[in-house]
Amino acid sequence: MIYNFLFKMLNGESDKMEANADRNYLNIINRYLFSLFFIFLFYSVFIIAFFGDMLISIFLTSITFFWLLLMAIKGKTRRFKKILKPFIILVFVLLTFIVSFFYIYTYKSGGVEYFYFCLLFAVPFFLNYKKDPFCIIFITLIISINFIACLYYDFNFLPRSRFLEKDDFKTLKLLNILFSIAYFFMDIVFITQKDALIHGLISDKKEKDSTIKDLVKTNTELMKHQMLINHLSEENVQEILSLAENNSPMFFEKFQVFFPHFIPEILRINPNLIHSELYFCALMKLDFDTKKIAQCTKNSIRAVESKKYRIRKKLNISSEININSFLIKI
Image 1 (cartoon, rainbow, N blue to C red):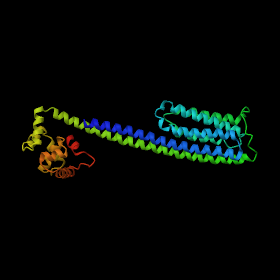
Image 2 (cartoon, rainbow, N blue to C red; image 1 turned 180 degrees about the horizontal axis):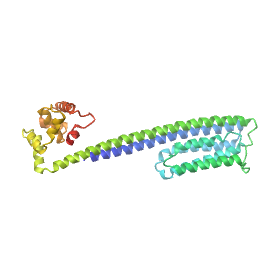
Image 3 (tube, rainbow, N blue to C red; image 1 turned 90 degrees about the horizontal axis):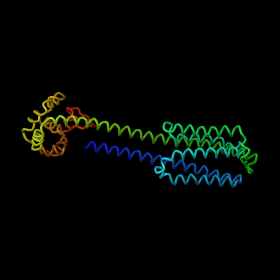
Image 4 (cartoon, one colour; image 1 turned 45 degrees about the horizontal axis):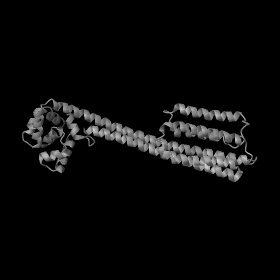
């Protein structure tokens, strides 16, 4: 029964770990969106201040506040989990078309094409290569097709900027190169944070799985012990438990009748165990805890703990192993 409780508790801890990981990942996304907010805000201010292009500035400002909207609803992503991945793909596609538009809008001379690579660098942060291979291939194809198409075709039906002059292209290109490099390093930082989060979750899961494995092993040992006791009659079980609880002089003799191999096996490990230590081993074989042993033997809890410590040392039992479980296996 106690192991069922521990299993439920560990599963509950696992759910908490995953929930914490989700929250931490959402916080990383939040910081990422906040960075995008500043990048787009800077561009919208820069364009209106240096080129006077009000329409494009308003367009970029609207995208800027779109990132703020995503930050506002980030905590509700669990509710919309089914549409989250298609939404991410849609955002990537829209951003690709926006980059393509500005690539044409700046006469292919403003260095906007570098942002295609920024979009590619951002894919690992939002998608998982193992879980979302087709989504990643789709986004990569969209970005690649847009880049190649814009490189080889003029798209004369799209508007060109009336505000850019010949000398402006060098400034704009330098600015876009610097920001694309900054964006690349920003992606690297956030991908590293995501990987650290995943690594921590994997480590916690391994630790939990190891604990469950130990519990299963201990539970199996206790079940074997229970099967050993079950072959005794109920009267015999009640008799030996009653003798132990009443600290009867007959207990140790009866115990050796019911478990004839236990004491010889213990003495085989360490023949220097004295009678009182063997007596304590018998009580622990019955899975009596420290408090119950103290009550049965009329000793203090501290005295029992000291005795158990000496037994543990003599039997060379690691401090990480439950001494009752160790003795139950014998």
